[in-house]
Every structure is written in C-alpha cells, then in structure tokens.
Length: 477
Image (cartoon, rainbow, N blue to C red; front, side, top):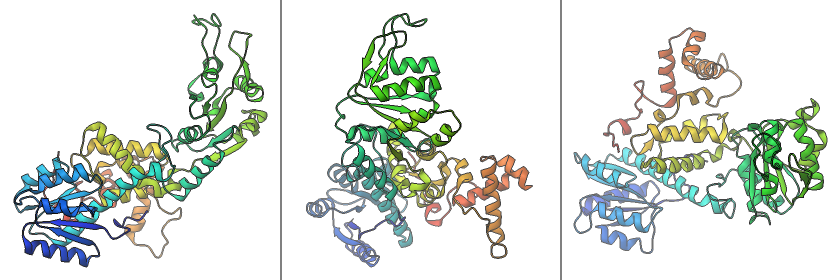
C-alpha cells in the first residue's frame, strides 16, 4: 500500500467566516489537486454536506451562529467517516486542546503556514483512509465476518488468494491441514472454514494440543468415564463429542504424543472412539481441521509423527503467509489493533505519523501478526497525544528492520550506510541488546541508541524530528 494519502481526488470542505482567508485556502488546496468547496458558517457547511460528503472538513473555531466546535460535533454525529481539522488564532492553544479532546483529528494555527497545512492535511487524510479501509475489510474481502471478534484483516494479494481457497474448500467435509508460522492466523482460517461451511450453526471447538500432556490430552479429546483415573469423579465428554455436527480444530497437531496419534487415526477413519476408562463406542460427525507451525514432512521422516495419520489430515493443505509476505496488510492491521487497544484504554488516538508507519512497514516481524498487535498495544500505552510516533514503538523492532541479505557494496556505499548495516545486523544477531551490540562493535551503547533514534526519524533526545512537528506545541490528553 502506498503511503500517499489520497489514491483518488479527496473532497475537502473549508469553513471560515472570513471571506479572504476562506478564498485563499480554497485556492491553495485546489492547486494541490483537491476538490474543494467552502462555507461561511457551520449551518451552511451542513447544508453543503446534505448532497456532498467530504473526506475532510477544515473549520475555524470562532464563527457566528454555529461555531467550529458545534460543527465538529454535528459532523461526528452524521458523517462518521469524515475527518475534522480545526483552525485557531495564534496563541489560542486552549481551543486546540479542547478540540482535540472532543475528537478533532488535528489543528492548525492562524496565520496558516502552507507547508505545514499540507503535512497536516495529507496525514489526516491518510489516517482517515486507513480507518475506512479497516471498516470495509470485513465485508469487502470475506463477504461476511468470520465470527464476532475473529475477522481476517487484509487486502494483499496473498490474503485474497488464501481466503479464496478457504471459500473453495469450506463446503467440503474433507480434513484440512493448515501450515504456517506462529502468529500468522491459523485459527482464524480454521474459524473461516467453519463459518463458511454448512456446519456453521453447529459448534466450533478448538484444543491446543501442545499445552497438554499425554494423559490430559487423551481425556480432553475423547472424554473419560467416572473413576478412570484419580480425580475422575464423573463421566465427562471430550472435545470430539462437544464438536459433534460441527468442526474440531487440533491446534499444534504436530505436538500430539504417539499413543494419542493412534487413537486419533481411528477417529478419522471410522468416526468412532471410546472414552478413557470405558468400553462404550461413541460415534461422532465432526470435520477435523489440524494446524501446526512444525514441518510435518520432516516429523514423519524422523519418526515423530505417524505417516498414515499425516495423510489422513493432509487431504487439503492451506498455508498462512507470514506478515513479511503480506506486508501490504500492515497499515490496515495496525489501524485495527490501534482502534481495539485505544478503545480499551479509553484513549482518543487517531492514527500513525508517516514516520511511525514507515517503521512498521520496514520491520521484518518474526513474531508475525501477534508481534504487531503487541507492538501496537505497547504504543497505545506509551502515547499521551493523539498520534502514534516512532518513539512510542518498542525499540527492539529496530533489530528487525528490513534490509537486503547482502552487505552494502564496497566501494559504492557511504560510511553512514555501512555503519547502519553493521549496527542493525549486529542488533539482529544479539536480539536487540544494545549493550551486547556495543561490545561487539567496540562503540558505546549510547552511540547505538543515538543512531537508532536517527534511523527512526527521531531527534537524538527522543523527540520527533521535522520542523512542522517541533514548531507546534504538543497537544496531550
């Protein structure tokens, strides 16, 4: 996904009771390629929006009749997808603070500085576009939610290809094996297979096989009779019985002990089993989906996984791509997690700065989507303003910034490029420890931290660089 904020010509409504200021702003924005309309007060602005919905409203705060704050409240109430930027007189920062606390996406001070205006407009439009995409992804890509709170977020070609295969095989009762690294969304794909199948109104049951030892896992899967073992005070149904008519997900199936694999093979072949400690045969109608991050082909070759069970599970194979393979999905995923965790924290955070988004797009994400969510949750906790900046992101992601596998060419690279490569590669080797990297490189940890701040786009003291940002007072919650 491009970082350009408007793939189409964005509509902007300028609201100001000063005719000359309004006309000048309209002309400047039109010269930049935007479609612009104007209004002299809040009432006229809402009248314009009856048949024309802008992506952005730029409004003065002080106006006769309906002022900018009232207009913003009306826009928020009636036009959920429209962003709002307020303009205040120089020195009236308290108005800007109030506006941001009440939901403004950003603010500008008069007299306007045009380069700063463009930075703000483009950033606000970019964040608004991400929010709109995020709201549309659940239906635009998959046609319906997978299940409450379990939507696949992504519009990359890799995501579309995977969801297309899921749609294609969902109607079948054939066993499905989902392969993929940890944190890539294997359970989401299993839930999609169930939600889009004829079994969708029956139970979806998941069991994490790696978390249970052999005896407990057997009881969890097949149930047990009263007195089957110490503590078994009553008969208990297992996960297969609970999933009857529906779908059972065997998560991390590669970790199932060999004795349990034998009993599982029989269930897949005959759809029958006995509870632990019992001799009554139980019949079930269950579609089995298995998922693992392990290389099951290797596990079979080395005798840790039964070959016959493998082929029973591997009727249809789906592979979940790593986050590095679906990098175009990062902005939408990041915004999705931002909205989730900002809501939990009761914070009004509107989006990401361009620099923060570039850091997210450049990281390799070895922990995949799960690592990205943890990163955004941390950023929400650290952010005291209304936009995520690079300084709010975990510093250890700098050890995983994307770069080529080969060192910069010599000759042909500057000392700064060579130093950057050496620092980031060393940090990757020591898993982000600046002290260990400093010892290997023969420089001080402080110098590494200084350089990391530069690579992030921050000033050495940790504040964001860029004149348009630093010249303005920080607005905090």
